[in-house]
Image: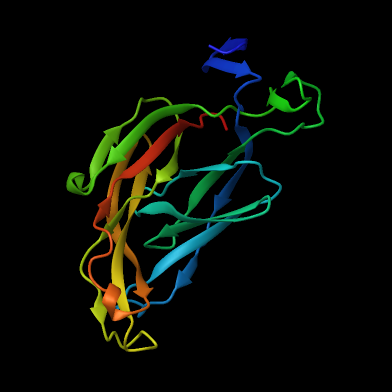
Length: 240
């Protein structure tokens, strides 16, 4: 264990040190409406999807956790970084409500409370912000299908996307009428998602077809990349 201190309370043991960053709760937001991308964008039929952009400004290394909808798939599928502004795009196959939690290296709150700084004067921990408390890491392969995990009772959970999972479902197609030039081809991608209902978590590495990826020439057409397992981290957000 690195040099530091441990604080024990009703929520367990917190390790505080000046070697590793202690990411903590920065904000919590409820979302009630997402933006729809109209149907008719996929070469194998019509499929609409919804998204919501989480923008975190003045960030150091933010982590986003989602308390997902109980009936529809939800996942963070893209991140854009511009300086210290991070934009996380959340996807779903329906317009759903969800709550997201932003965790990051803490900054001083300007209020009275217990704080820990390192030798460079950088804030490492403040008692005014909630701790990042992982409870489970779950890997889901394509072969698992809908994977069910029962979490410990008596707590509230949220899910961090470590890797969303991916499945290239078929070879690319040349001559798709929705593609501007005839020598391009398109590739179907299924992306992973999760559903969280209290302590019941369902994960899947590729439940929903989100988009086609267009490629520049017919020599590169064909199956792009098989499959990639999904990895999610479950955290305890009780009382946040």
